[in-house]
Structures are given as C-alpha cells and as structure tokens.
Length: 352
Image 1 (cartoon, helix red, strand yellow):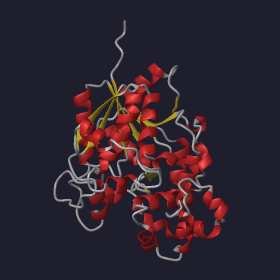
Image 2 (cartoon, rainbow, N blue to C red):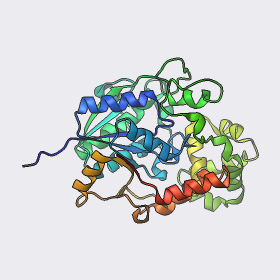
Image 3 (cartoon, helix red, strand yellow):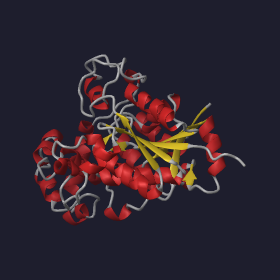
Image 4 (cartoon, one colour):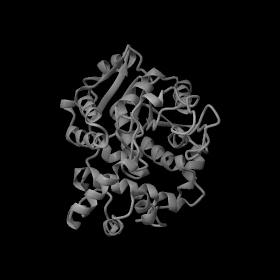
C-alpha cells in the first residue's frame, strides 16, 4: 500500500520575499518533515490594505527557488479583509489541497499563549488590533485564526518563532522585516536582506494610486459605496468627507480608535477595485500560480479529488483577479500594465 505523503501548508504574502521567509520555509520543512510544501499567497493586493510591493509572479518564483513546492493564490477579496477572514480562507484553501499540517510564524511561539490571549468573544465593530491593546502581538492575531480553522478541519497547527518584528524598520541584520525593506530599499542597500534584486524589479506603492482612489470616492454614489466590501457603519461618509486630502493625510485623518490604518486602507482598496459584499463566496477552488517538479507530481496524484486549476480560463474568480491585476498595473506605463495582464491570463510557473 502506498504511503500517504505528508503535506504541509504555509500562509504567506512575501511583500517582498526576504531571508526571514527562507528561514520560515526551511523550518517548516524541518519541523513537519513534509514531502510537499504548499504556500497560499496573497495576490496583487495584500492584507495591510496596499498594492503588493512586487507582483505575484516574482514572489511565486522566489518561493519556488527557495523550497516551496506549490504556490496557490489567495483571492483578492480575502487578502483585503481582516485577520480572521484572511486566515480562515487561507487555511480552507490549503485544506482543498489536502494539507495535513499548517506551520505559521508567531511572536510567542506557543499555542496555549495564543489561545489564551483570545479567550473572550470579540465585540462587534471593533478591530482586533484595538481590542488586543498591547497584549497580543500582530502575528498572533492571525495565529489564533489559523489554529481555530485548522482545528475545525483536522489540520495540525505548529507555530514557528518569528525572526524579527513585523513592523521593525531596521535593515542592519541579514534578516529584516518586509516593512523595513519596503521603507529602505530606495535609500539604503538592502541586498543583504533578500535574494531578490529589487533594483531590477518594478515596485508598487499605495501613494501611486492616489488619483484612482480619489476618482472612485468622488464618482460612486453612497448607495454604491455601501454595497462594497468592508463599507459599513457609515465609514463611506468619513472617507468621502476627507477625499480632497492627499492620500496619506486622508488615511491618517480617518484612522482612529475605531478604525486602524490597515482597516482604512483595506476599505479604500475594496472601493478602488469595486469589490462588492455579494461578490464574496467561501473558498471552493484553488488556483495554482506555480510549482516545481515535486509539486507537479503531487498535483497529478490529487487531480481527481482536489478542486484546483492551473489554467486561468478554468478559474472561477478569473474576472475578479483580472480586474485587480489591471488596476494594479494602471499606475505604470502601458508596457508594464499589458505585461501584467498577459501574465495574469497565461502564466504558470514550472520550476524544473
């Protein structure tokens, strides 16, 4: 009888891919002793409510070059939601791929500590970040949701100690946070922190989307805005009221105890992409962005009992992702935008 392979999943954004991510991949393989490692990755927009720093194909290739066997895509409307929805959807997609173990980065590195920190029912209308105050560290907010969803699906959850602070801005060490790399790459040498040559890759910043965001806020009716994902409790009135401000000032002015910066940014991105509340459906199909030969063999093994696609034409959410990619590329020149659109439609990375 053929032994069932050990399949481990990780949830990633790689915004951008750096040395800490290589450590995470290596530790995930080491701890789980997996035969196949699958990463579910945010697409061209990420959970902090911003366009991805680099496109998803460069991030997929980096992952496959450093130990991931298969990369699948987290749909945009899950990437642009709060920690609970982001984490739940990510684990459910990994479950579609028959993952038996989930490895995730954690500041506390202890399942009981993470569980105990969330031993109450979150109050409706308040963000996790503000509910937690200073007691819970950022990745442990996601960690709790990973644990809960994995447990419900019969997936084993294993935390790995993070190697840096999520928002640490230092780039002195070889392992630096994605935040610090994004902040420093234009003004300092960050080549020791990432295997990517960022000088040769087109990067994206939320500031480039200011005009598009203002246009969306100015031209959509209140009724239309209220139909959009994350637009509730009158947040549309706040955003429209301050829509004449520069984007950074708009975000800062709307940030409060009620709404974190990330919550404001996620809402703006959903408005920009015109993602409706009614668009969101539970994860039912996984889209493969790339694989190596080991990953390809595993996909062949599960093709009859796992709902995944490698062809964009067969993807249920192709319209959503094509729109997201088109808007992601609109702030660049036509050549770059058209290349992104063509990649969206036709690209599948196979590492031999």
